[in-house]
Length: 194
Image (tube, rainbow, N blue to C red):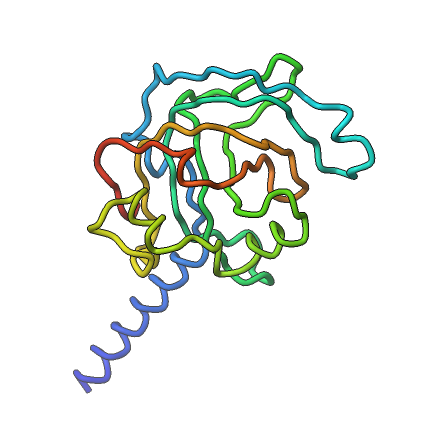
């Protein structure tokens, strides 16, 4: 009888923890101690009406930008009917949205490998693979971590400076930018989990 009760309690705890894992969405609040309120943002980004014309919902921004903040590699579940996926997302230092001179603004940027190909970028974000190599992963998060460590609940985060290239406003993804290891400069301790 005691074994049955112990087993029942163990199974209940396991199920509850699993449910918490699948029901929680990581946000900037989970890594609050990594942010700097006096972060920097320099930008020549500007809405590009010519490039956006005829592209449907996607809106393009010409120019570039450099911004400090926190880069997170985490599990993301938006809808229970869609399989969970992993993504690299960058949260700027400042609490308020970063507002561009033409009125557009963002509070997070998803990093994608193939942002210029809508089919590939959507496929990448909706799968369990963002095509980041082990070598690229270690350049961002250090030799202590590998891609297999992504299964830490809440993901892995590090302070970073990001050069923004090819910024786009993409339906369902929010703001997205091209991923390239040379665009990312990391510093400070790695935080894993929430």
